[in-house]
Structures are given as structure tokens and as C-alpha cells.
Length: 256
Ligand code: ADP
Image (cartoon, rainbow, N blue to C red; front, side):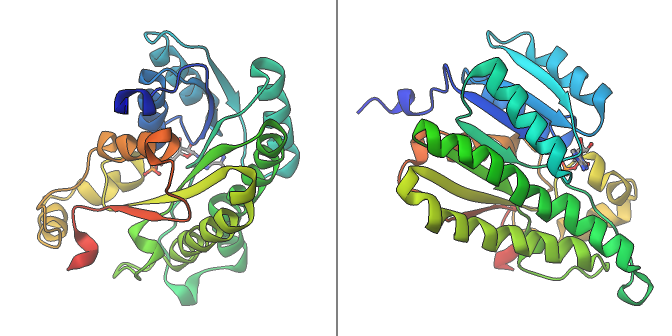
């Protein structure tokens, strides 16, 4: 068995949503290192362009597409543009997301819907329109960024986020079930505390960092690269018998 070959993503095309920053950007870099062409899809056009610039050092083609992944017509345009440019989509990384901390009794229905739209409806829309192409072309892999917050409530109230991430967990299982017959594998990653712009505020306070680290068996928060390498595994043939799974990358947080 040639195990190295299983990680080879040469001639593949990946769409990574939220690849303008944080975990998504690092996933784009990791997939590119294994040879995949990359579509960088992010609502922040400047950040998307910057990621593409950084991908230029790898021998692949990359394209920045500004998009709000919660809007159906924009998702359709993204998929059409990708098909025109690359002719197929092999890998979809549903990673774009947004956080809102708010006490439940103070949360407006508008804010609630917005978080659900950006974090969960987007996974429905992207999976649907990319999945249609994958079914036509004979298969593919989808990796969703869930969270430890898919499984637990946080002490700091952020209910809409947790509900959206719990939804991603079940959506992963439903899609894995429905699309196994089309040779489409669907898995998710549940990152724990990771150093990104989303958690920047949290880690600015040294006391906070100490408190969080004391809850993590490995005793530290994650670098985005430690999440990205798991995405490569799940996107590649190295995980060919894995579907409908969630893999925790949380330093052991949930075992405590
Ligand atoms: P993390 O990497 O921890 O998930 P970040 O805030 O660092 O968090 O990254 C999230 C990315 O998702 C950002 O680049 C952000 O611009 C992107 N994003 C947020 N909302 C949308 C959206 N509606 N459509 C596309 N991308 C989005």
C-alpha cells in the first residue's frame, strides 16, 4: 500500500469557505500543499485576495471569490464560476462562520436568524449546489467545521452559535447517509479553542487564557494548522472508509 499517495490531492479542486482568515485560511494552505487547486470563498474580498497571494508559492491554481455563503444566488454563482474555471469540484470545506455572544433574553430574532443563516443555512446551500456537481462527476468529499460547541453549552452565553454548530453535526450525518451511494463522503471537525480572529478578544486577557488552558488536558489552545491537517486527512483518500464522523480536535477538552 502506498500510503503517501492517499494524501495526494494533485489535480483536485477544492472550495474553502471562510478561507480569508483563521482556520479556513490554514485549511486552504494545507490542501494546496498537497496539490489541490483552491477556490478561496470569503465575504471579505481583501482577505480572500490575500490568501490567494499566499497560495502563489505552491504549484497550484487559486481563485478568490467574494461571497456571502448565506445567500442562495451567490452560492449558485460561486459554483458556476468554479465549474467554468476548473470543470469539477472534488472537495468542499464548509468553514465560514460567525460568532455572537449574547444573553438569550437579550437576543433579537434578527440576530438569531443571522447566525443560523451564516453558520448553518450556508452549509445546506453550499452542500446542495456543490453536491449536485459531485453527484454528476462521480463523487467527492465534504468537510464541515463544527465545534466543541456542537456538544456543550458554553459558560459565556452564545446560544445561536452553539445551536448552529449542533445543526452542522446532524447535517453531516444526514448527508453522509443520503450521499454515500454517490461516493460522496461527509465528515466534520470539532475544533476546540483555536487562535483565530474569532477568539482574539478572548485570548487578549491573560487570566482568560489561563482559565481556558486549565480546562484542556493538553494544557494549551490550538494553532489553526493543527485543525487544518485534520481537514486534509478527511478531504483525502487517507480517510476513504470514514463518513458521517465528527473528529474532535480540542486538546481533550470534551473528555473533561
Ligand atoms: P475561525 O477561523 O475561528 O472560524 P475567523 O473569524 O478567523 O474564525 O474566520 C471566519 C471566516 O469566515 C472569516 O474569514 C470571515 O470573513 C468568513 N465569513 C464570515 N461570514 C461569512 C459569510 N457570510 N460568507 C462568507 N464568509 C464569511
